[in-house]
Length: 218
Ligand SMILES: CC(C)(COP(=O)(O)OP(=O)(O)OC[C@H]1O[C@@H](n2cnc3c(N)ncnc32)[C@H](O)[C@@H]1OP(=O)(O)O)[C@@H](O)C(=O)NCCC(=O)NCCS
Image (cartoon, rainbow, N blue to C red):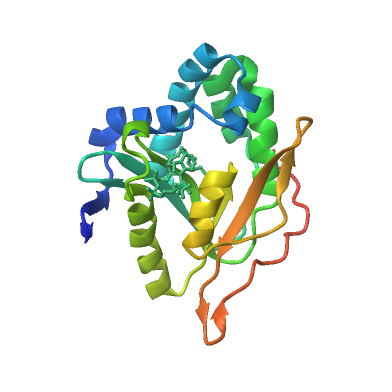
């Protein structure tokens, strides 16, 4: 457990599922990507609870899930020390179960993320969310900074996709640099790929080259 000034960060467990899935679903409810994925706000809430239930348990099983002592925030990280295996049939089926008639856009977005995911060893921030009623109090920055300190000790970079200009500016302040953006078809919504390089004697390592195209795993 780490105390970052007034924010205490700890590892999440299955006991935290209810409140943290709600934080994820509610925090991601607004924004251009949410509007694109599911235009109807009522449908969006129902689908997002299912989608983030899956994301939370995937994070516990295969990644690292951090929260705060008051369960106001959650961050789901994945160590990616080797190039990813590609999009799997299992993932596709889980996505279709969670998102039903909206699966095509979720699949497209995840496939784009996957296709452009850097090969260089790093930790991937899949999701970060702060309870909407507690945003803008430094909680998100504290949660990220705690994990960044651990990555800096290990000499490892971090990678994420920023879904709007506001969270992008937070990441820029925390040491990330933007790479070539992804553009969601056909509405032209940008998603910024961002990289926080490991420290070198001359500064942080630069945004890595895009991976060669990968074929999906059947
Ligand atoms: C992005 C987020 C994790 C930041 O956590 P936070 O505790 O609110 O942020 P902090 O108080 O530490 O830092 C404030 C900065 O966060 C960003 N931010 C705050 N609220 C935000 C929101 N609703 N959406 C996007 N970015 C936001 C801004 O850059 C803000 O700085 P500004 O006021 O100068 O614009 C949180 O606001 C959130 O959950 N947003 C909605 C979900 C989201 O965008 N997740 C990230 C997906 S890539």
